[in-house]
Image 1 (tube, rainbow, N blue to C red):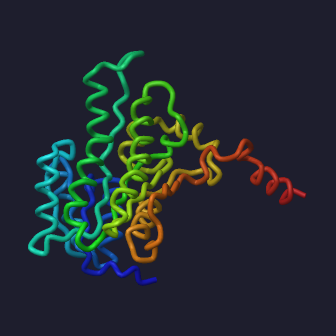
Image 2: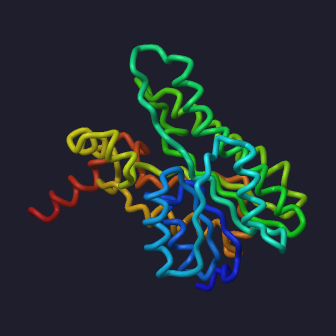
Image 3: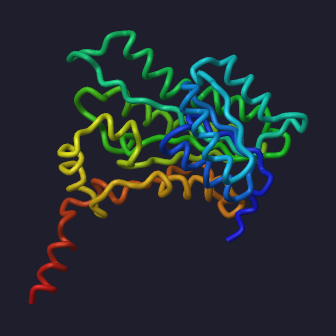
Amino acid sequence: MDLHLKGKKVVVTGGSKGIGYATAEEFLKEGAKVIITGRNQQDLLTAIQNLSAFGEVEGRIVDSTDEKAVYQLAEKAAGKEKRIDVWVNNVGTNKVRKGELYAEEEMDYLIATCFKSAVFGSQAAYTYMKESGGSIINIASLAARCATTGRSTIYAAMKSAIVNLSTTLAGEYAAYGIRVNAVLPGYTKTPLVESTFTKEKLEKLLQNNLLKRMADPKEIAKPVVFLASDAASYITASSLEISGGHNTVLNPEYSYELRRKRENV
């Protein structure tokens, strides 16, 4: 399927690793021109070197919690045409709190990284989309649907806020031909997930997953690219969960047990 993304101007924040990197790669394969951001210069340089094999890509060091820096990024991405076609807000983090209660600095860090970055990014994108339309995609999390108890409470709350933000902005930007959607990835093979959970913990968590495995970042990236394309031109204010059916049924082992029983007969 031709997604008609050739020559489109795309920004992917947090694009040096994980889902952001995979998303940039998929856009490049479709012929888009991509700018990715990151905060670690070496990671960004490595990503650019690898991604350049797929198309026209640039990288910029940007703190997505800095309003001025985000607007400067948008101005750079828009260029002389003063146009941005797609903006993917992918920046996020999960800082596990040190004690039973959150300290103010922990809260401020999580709110800024997981939520303010998406607000600034969406507003910056709107500035350069309102003349000719565009697509904004916010990367939320399965945690927006499944409340996360324990030491990651603020992370889940912020991802829920991202979903609400996406719906709200879809309403505010609709008259300008701008579609806004959220994507809710489940457990995915990213540096953040692999550094947060032990192998044993992940195996336990995946017992409630219908597909019994984590996602590859490309399995999140491809639907993101679809949402940004003309193939999804009637999709806005939506939240697409890509979780392998995690925590969706009470008996996730049912089909596996039934198959084993049938094959053993």
